[in-house]
Image (cartoon, rainbow, N blue to C red; front, side, top):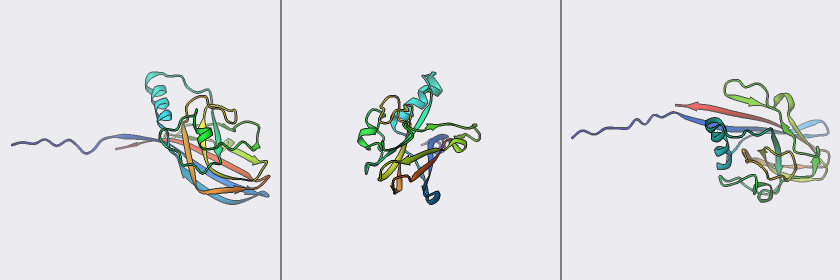
Length: 174
């Protein structure tokens, strides 16, 4: 009797966003943390639609923060996430900071040249960050592309700054 084996090898692509969070108080960086995201099903569907089916691309991407003690799950959507995760709204600027992507190289792009900065107008505990195509704080339009919970929540005071460097990357894994 002859049996055939299917190859255990297969090629996969991994997409994701890495967030580098710097907590700044009185001009000094008091903590740094790098976290990796979850791409919810809605974000995966959007990526596949744009890449394979010529779906509609977002005009821009924006970084938000959440203050709820919440862990992102695959079923999260842009329509439900700001409420479920309790989006933080008490910071300047007046809208979510834009993710300004630099050049694409090595399957990645980041906002290093124009990092997102949040200056707090009230004391908060910040649990994580997310990426959506809507600038309006609390806005729920478009796909949720990325959400990440910090390993260590950030206890921010008035005038503290959270500086967020985001890197979106695609990696082929054989």
